[in-house]
Amino acid sequence: MIQILHIAAECYPAAKTGGLGDVVGSLPKYNTQAGILSAVIIPKYSLRWIENQHWTTVYTSSVWINWRQWHFRVQQQTGNSLGYPLFVVDIPGLYDRPGIYNDPSGAPFGDEIERYIGFQQAVLDWLLSFPWQDRPRVLHCHDHHTALIPWMVKYCQAYQQLAPIPTVFTIHNGQYQGAFSPKNVHLLPPYEASARSLLDWGGIINPMATAIKTAWAVTTVSPSYLFELHQNSLGLESLFRQEWRKEHGIINGIDSQVWDPATDPMIQFRLEANNISKYKTKNKRVLCEWFGFSNEYPLVSFIGRIVNEKGADLLPDTYRRLLQSGARINFLILGTGESWTENEFRSMAHQFPGRVNAVIDYNEALAHQIYAGSDFLIMPSRVEPCGLNQMYAMRYGTIPIVRSVGGLKDTVPDIGEPDGSGRGVRFDQFSVEDAVHAIYRAASMWYNDPETVVRLRERVMAIDFSWEKTIEQYFSVYRNLGARIQAEEVKLQATREETRAPEPAPVRKAAKKVPPKKTIIKSTPVATAPPVAATKPRKPAKTENNAPEKPADTPKSKPARKASKAAPKPKRPKK
Ligand code: GLC
Image (cartoon, rainbow, N blue to C red):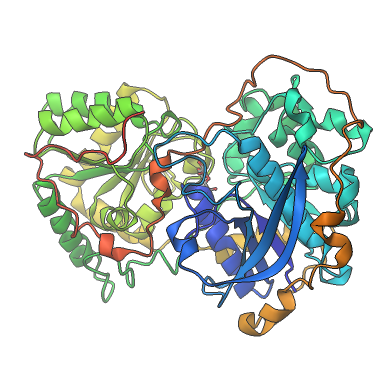
């Protein structure tokens, strides 16, 4: 029996644009290994990994969105190769597109509201078909795309049977709240009139606010981020403060089976016999060859979305300042995002050949090699709910240089800490001066105190960032809500049949459904645009290639760019 059902828009390797996908793709595996069978359900996008799987249809039905009926089916991945059951909701016309949030040119689809409402309804509709004793013990919703579920099960007549199941809402990114205009309230399924106010925040419908009000528990992906949301969360501060009793900050883990320098098939030289120096030196040499760098200088890399949230726009001036003052440091950038900053990196690669290089692309395999071969990884984030890259870096022996914010603060104590707990270099202000100073400190250590670097590498590589450590905190959140979760022997293949929902009963047939009545509520139309990015994509479309399974795409097969050549051209047209 599925004990925890994770409901999300992303799940690696099926669909990933960032950390949300990584977490949803790995947390259930470790829950399941601990004996708590957990499953994931996401929309069925037309993406490569998804299209290459075998799917078994376990349920068919339909949902109404406004006047339109959408037929859907829920399918389960055959074989459970991910270590947990993965389900998808196939809604032809709504989700079968070659992107998660955007089309391949980077443009948002424009019907996000219908898409998320349809997905959430379909999931609940499917759950209703389970005999009550087989229903999951917890519905765990992730980010705004699934934030209306806690409200729907409480207040929408159609789903109220599910109301006794505890709901947990995890915030991976509070910048995107999914807000939309009250003019669209009719897209929601019928609900109790008294519940209308729970949808509202500041005159608009704000799913994230609704989840904070109605979920049984709210978690964020690090304790510091939770604290920061109380200070600054794009208008939700007072709500976060009001609901503090049910909030928990739980730091993410990483999939230490995938992220293991001793076994990683995507890196050129694996860690053998715990010989860290040999492993780092060889991998760095590879990177330096590919990118035309000298081995003799420290290599500082940036990996991630080139967006303001991640602070990538601070780097061009920071690097320029350092290079113009004669600093002997090399800089490598991997990622895609905002054109202005992408272009800055491209032109810097021309201006400083042999010192700066940039791959404006999403490339999982190259990312692994950069973690293995760099000396430092910089994360100058403006906001960082948890951050996984600093953990990947440390696991691969790369010392993080981070801004003291959110999860970075919780995972990277500064090397100057008197208790000797340091793991990297930290800076406080989001300013070129502070970032320059931090890189300067790191480089000075590299040049003047190589022994400390060696010791630091050993220390960070020995840290246990695995999920095994943190899942217990989630289990105790679930249990405190009264969820009767229980460790049991999980035999995935054998339980696959059992996890199937029964054939839909006739009453659940789409034909018997009637469109929702619109008389329940009279919304007050408010013309103002939502203050937060309602339908904005979380991440750039280019990162939706989810090519993890494709080491053929390794950096080797890509032309390694010598710094003297032009920086790589982006593959997608400029916005
Ligand atoms: C989002 C956050 C990131 C976090 C990840 C997983 O991508 O920006 O900080 O690590 O979600 O929770």
